[in-house]
Length: 142
Image 1 (cartoon, rainbow, N blue to C red):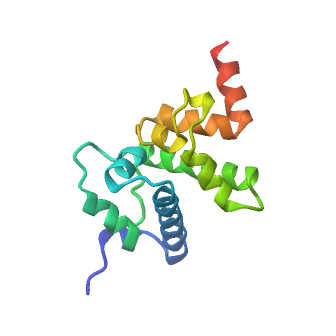
Image 2: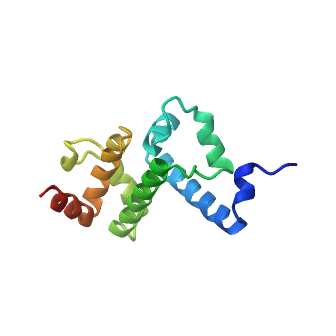
């Protein structure tokens, strides 16, 4: 069986790391309660991307090296880390937080804000979890 082109370019270790990151981000978005169409939007895939594309990534294909997608993956990984840091002894509290209305988000749920799919939506949620992001944004605006 012929190997896919993207596989022949990567070494096995790099491929496994990318697959692990891809699966963990999709698993996190699943836990947040986002459906496939919302996940595609959050990840920054082009409009019209079919949900079966996400299924391929869930099974055995890393996210593409597209700059926008990789930027969003990085923000989502930062959100995951911030939730783990905020709730180190109880991961269920992280899920509770992401699904509860938040006064800093105009009483919207963080998962609802994420599902809007813009990069600013992702950063809005991250800036609440990680004050250093908020400080960076605030100081850049001055």
